Length: 229
Image 1 (cartoon, rainbow, N blue to C red):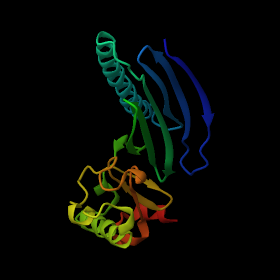
Image 2 (cartoon, helix red, strand yellow; image 1 turned 90 degrees about the vertical axis):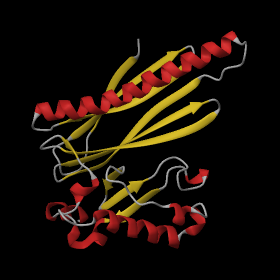
Image 3 (cartoon, rainbow, N blue to C red; image 1 turned 90 degrees about the horizontal axis):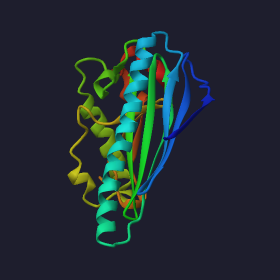
Image 4 (cartoon, one colour; image 1 turned 120 degrees about the vertical axis):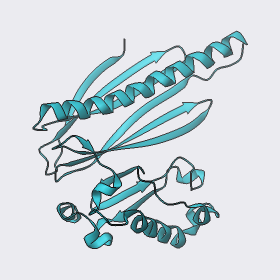
């Protein structure tokens, strides 16, 4: 059975929300797991709190299940063929990047060590803790604003001004952000990111574009302009 224990880390931010970590450690013949799962506390509506916590935890445990099944399949094949098999190692960590104005942003980072190669997956969670609704990019901006064009302009400027950090064809290939593009809020910034090796060389891992919310001016929803402070 996986071991599980918790420890408290209070948030210094302005929501009355604290976060604890549930740690799941598990070792099987072909895979080792060390997963840190966030749990929010202090949300006034207990149903919303349970919903958010369950949503995140089920994603982490689904990742664990899929990786265990893959490790078992390939481990068994290697054993049958008398081939060497490097056990998989998986882990997850998270950052509570924003905890103000009834918004919580959590950035999960999954790490997989498979076949001698490292891979990273980042998954953001942005919740309105008064409704339990998951926020999308459009929810940061006032209705009717072409928010994609505003974000794309900022990212293109970054690509043009820092060509040495990205693949030569990056600017030409940049298609712009999608409606469901992954993002999180952090210290007055809108952080938008792309997949592992998607637009940058290996050493850059997962490029994150941090755009100051102030650069969007009045296009940001008034209640969220407080985040700029």
